[in-house]
Image (cartoon, rainbow over all chains, first blue to last red; front, side, top):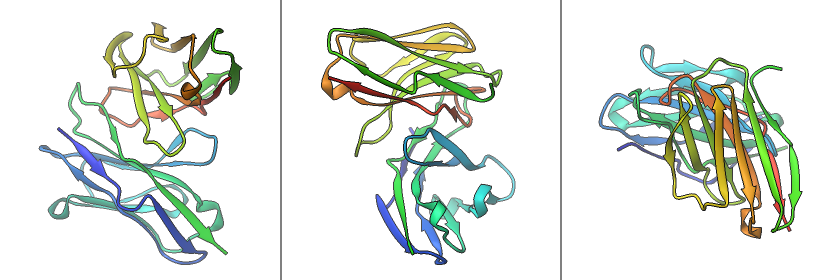
Length: 114
Length: 112
């Protein structure tokens, strides 16, 4: 069975500072990994995904994430936070099988201080 | 219309009312989902439809009744709801249930 853990339900950074949102997963087979962002009163929007190939994945809005198999992690980063990055971020995992759906983490609320 | 659309965006209903939420995807996907998102709670998967057949029903009360008449449309029929059912209801679709899901903007439901 797969699972995903997001450490830190709330993260606060200053504008211009590094953003680091943590995600660890559990999967018995090579995982597919995803990060989503949700702005207030909106649906979830796909930021980036890892399925196979290059382990450093670049997404929209300057975000990127690195798949580290040895650490079972897929942390999301952005070098310089912008006020517009304030939102909730969700990590998700699946194993790509025909019957295995995405499992979402509990989310991390990112606040950006001026 | 593009992506996943949901109507209505906001709904206020009494506990004795019957209403329906509608979701439509314009992406050619073969799987659709209903999620419930309550304040300070994790995203809750309610129903999964794959190829128009329900493949998952996560112990959702019978006052919520899904319907998937074709691969592009998904409904959630609501009746005799409780105040604790007030939440953001999100619809999503994907091409295969293991792959990235695309979400609609949600319906904000308030039960009075």
